[in-house]
Image 1 (tube, rainbow, N blue to C red):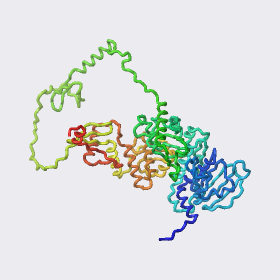
Image 2: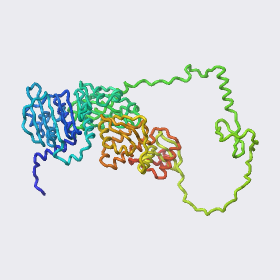
Image 3: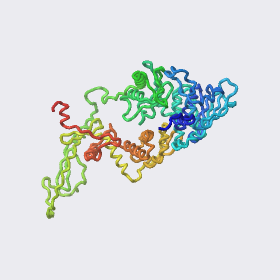
Image 4: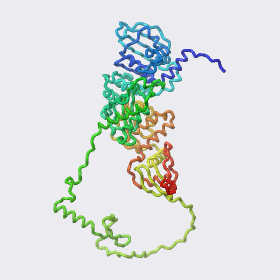
Length: 614
C-alpha cells in the first residue's frame, strides 16, 4: 500500500475549489452573498465572456480592514462564526470561510476595500491562491473584488464549461434568486457592457418581482401575508388561471436563503386544490421565516436544502396562509340568468307567434316521400331520419314501383369457385363500452374489462411515429413571431440546444434578457402550447438529458408527443377512441414513452369477488 501523506496546501485548495467553484455563477453567488452579509444596500455585478474572462462585484458595505485582507483568503477564515453554539443559529448567507480561498486558487484575484469612515483603503493581488503584498489604495467605501481568467491553472475544468451565453444566463438566474431573496438590496447586472437587470432595492418585494420576472407575471400575483405556529409566510402567489406548465416559477426562501423543498411545494399546491387546471402548476415567491434554531442550513454543500425541526408546523402554516389569500381573492360566482324570469309555468307569447310555431311543428310531423333512383323503390321517411338525397328524380319520369325491384336483364355468369384457404381466426375485437372521467376508455373482451389511459396510449403512438419518421419535421410558420420569456435556467438550457430545436421544427433565436423569439413551430404543436412545450423541454434538459445527444433527442420527442396527444379530461369522439383500442389490443401500444402501462385488465372473477358474488 502506498505511504499515506498529507496533501500539499495548493492541491488541497484546488480540491476545495472543485467543490465550491463549479462555474462562474458559483463565484458570483459567493461574492454577492459576502456583500449582502457585509450590509451593502447596493451592488454592481459585471461579467465578460460569461464570467470566464472577468467577474467584478462592487458593493458599498462595511469593507475590510487592510490587515485582514490576506486573512480573508485563508481556508476556514470567517467573521461569522465564533463558537460551536453559533452553528445552531446561522443567520448569514456564508459562514464556512471557504469561498474566497477556493476562488483565488483557480483564478487571478484583485481586491480593493475601504472600511466606512476610514481615510484610505487597501489593495491585494493573488495569483493561484498565492497572495502578494497589501498596498494602500484610494477607493470608495465598500469592497470591489475582481476575478480574472477563471480556471486558468486547471485546464481540465475548462472543457466542462458551456457557451458564454449559457454561463451568463446561469449568472443571471442566480442573481434573480438573490434579488428576490433580498429586495432591500439594489442589484445591477452588467453583461459584456450591457445592463441586463436592475432591481430598485428599498425592501418591497413586488417591485423586485417586476424587475426580475416582468410585468405579466407581476400583474397576476396575489399577496400572501400571515403566520401560524411560530412560522411567518409572506410573499406572492399566482392567480389560479395564471398557472404554468412546470414548477420553474416556484421560488422559496427560508430566513433569507433560497432553498428547494418538496415540503413547501406540496403545501402550496395543496392550497390550489380544485382551483388549478389539471397539468398546470402555481408560481410563487414566498419567504418563510421561523426561529433560526428550528432550521438546519448546514445539510448541503450548496446550502439549497434545509431541514426543519417541525415539518408539520411549516407545512400547515404555508398551506393555510396561501389558501386564505386565494379564498379572499376569489370572486363570488356569477348566477346564470333564468330562462323564465317571471317564474311562471306556461310560456307566454302573442297569437301570431303561436300560430307560426304551430304551423312549423305540423309540417315537420308529416311524413314525406322520396324516390330511390338506384333501386326504383319509394322510401318513406319521417323527420327524425330524413336523409339528404343524392339526386332528385325527374319531374316527368315514370312513377317507380313501390314494392318489387326490377330484374337485371343481364345476369352475370357464375365463375368457378376458387380453392378456399382456411385462415386462422383473429381474436374478436374489443368492444367499446364508454369512457370514465373523460380519461379512461372502457373496453370489453369476453369476460374481461380493459381500462385504457387514452392520453398515454396516444402519446406512445405519436412518439413512435416521430421517432420512425426519417423525413424533416413539418413546421408551421407563425404569421407573427412569438416572444417567449423564460426563467434564466430554462432560457440557458434552450440556448444550448438551439440546433436541436431547429431539427424538430422550432425556429428560435436569442432575443436577449431571457427571451426567445419563436418564428416557426412543429405542425403537431398548437400555437397556444408554445410556452408550455418549451418549458417542459427545458426542464428535461436541465434534469440531465442535455449531457447525452440521444437522450436530448428523446426528450424532445417525448415533449412533442405529449403536447400533441389528446389529454385526460378532454371530450373525445368514440371513433377516435376505437382506434386507440385497436392499437392497444394488437399489442402495438403497451407502454407510454415514460414506461407507464397504458392498459389495466379487470376480470369478471375480480368484479364478482368485489361484490362478494364469487
